Length: 299
Image (cartoon, rainbow, N blue to C red; front, side):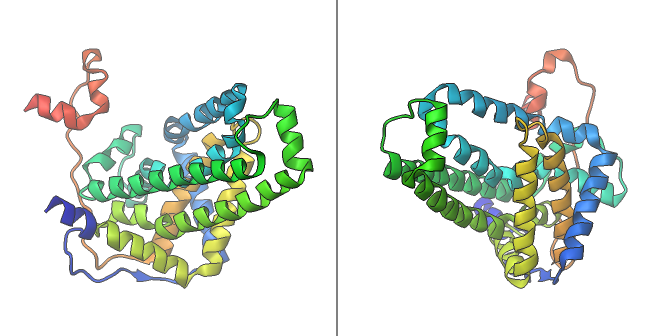
């Protein structure tokens, strides 16, 4: 029964949400609304996304071990594949602000009480699998061109990539394959996670709706993918320090893009009543980070 709800949502025979056609102006407006959400809730965005530059710096530190140097770019680029799932808290903040209800940093955890949480986790697991496959494929492409031996040095690795035939093959094939992975993730997730947060439609319907949205708006969605990739690249310079701004803006903007593309009023709402938040004590840490564990203890 639980598996059925994860896949099909509240009503298995529900009609699919309608899809609107959008244009470039809608993308610009979604970005503007995302920036406005970030300006209104900057502390929340930093709270959610400070981990990203930390992870980026950790990835850069891994280059001290030259064996992982060839995977640094695939790791940094592939991490964006998990972005739609990682931004769930940002969608929730934008959803609450749009509804005109009070917003606080702790509201990001209300996602855990959504009736769609099973479908959300399932799609998150799917993106994680795609990410791991991408890393394995990227490593195989490197080995096919340079073999198993680690680079002699970072400078030598950079020279070989930029100025040798094997390096040119690595760039061309790697980017072509990476584009296919990014296109796949864009198709299945561009609106699926916000839809699940808003409506209890199940994982299958969410993915199908996302694919339909891309097929109905191929040019705007392709441009959206380019915008996301470009902003993530700019946010990564220097040393990933721009990501605490870029990532929350994109997360908030994705919610507004969903609202422009998907007409989901006929689908059952993913209504949930956030748990009453009583006083917290220092002795409760770290249990407060895991609401489900705390509930079992209280009962």
